[in-house]
Image 1: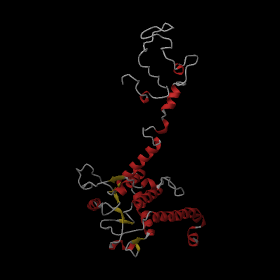
Image 2 (image 1 turned 180 degrees about the vertical axis):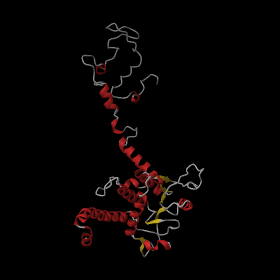
Image 3 (image 1 turned 180 degrees about the horizontal axis):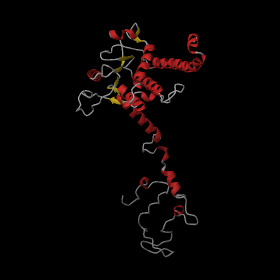
Image 4 (image 1 turned 60 degrees about the horizontal axis):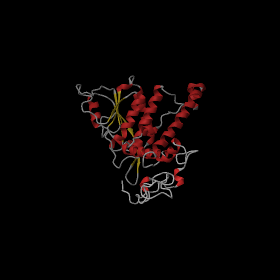
Length: 327
C-alpha cells in the first residue's frame, strides 16, 4: 500500500481500497464454496499438461487441484467472455446431464447461445446443417464429452474455454480452468462463479453487492426425485384420505348443514316412530271385520307387521320381516 501511495497518491488508494477489500473477502468466500462442493478433488489419473495445476496427491491416489489457480482462471475466462460485444456469439456447451441446467441458466443471465445435450456433428463446419452457427467463442463443460465441439472449433479457429479435470486432454483448449468437472455440485458452482464474474465485468451489477441468484438454481435436479417430491407434497396436501378429500369431507357434517334437524321430529307434529302403535287396535273383530273405530283390521289373523326401522339406523342393517318376502 505504501508503494502505491508513493506512485499514485493517497486519494486513488483510498477510493480503491474498499473495492479491493471486498474482492479479497469475496475470494475467500468463493474458495470456501469450492471446498464445500469438492471442486478441488481430481481423479487418480493426471495428464502431463494438467500437472502444473495439481497441488499434491493423496494417499488413496486422488490428485488435489490448486483452487487458487482455479479462481484466477475463472477471472481470466470471464474477462474474455465480457470482451465479446454480442453475447450471442458465445456458445456454451454441455453434453452431460449434470451441466445442462447450469448451461441454460448461464445463457439466460448472460445472453449466450446454449447447446445443452447432444452436439450435432457439423454444427460449425457444415453450412447446410439446421443448427449451423458461427460463434466467436466456445465454453465447454468437459473436454472428453464435448470433444466433437472442440475439434470443430479447431477447424474454424474458434478459441475454446474448458473446465478441465486432472485427466482431461488439453488439445485445442486455449484456456483451461482446473476443477472437478464430474460432480454435479462442482459443475453448478463453476458456472455460477463464471456467470457472476461476467455480470460484474459488464456492469450489470456493482461488485459491492452480492448476486441475488442462488447457486442452488444451477444445480442438476433428478427427474425421479422431483416426481417423488411432488407425490409427497400431493399426499400431504390431501390429508392422507383414501377418497382423495381427506378430512375436509364429512358426509354427516354436510347433511347437518343442508338439512338441520333432519333426525329430530317436526315441531308441533306427531312423532309416528315414538307411538309404536298398531293399526289393528285392540277390540277389532275377526278377519276383515271393522273395529270399534270403524277401521278394518286387514292384518287380523295373519302375521304381525314388521316394526318401523329406527331413523338413525340403515335400512340395509334391518332383518327381513317375518313371513314377508325379501325384496
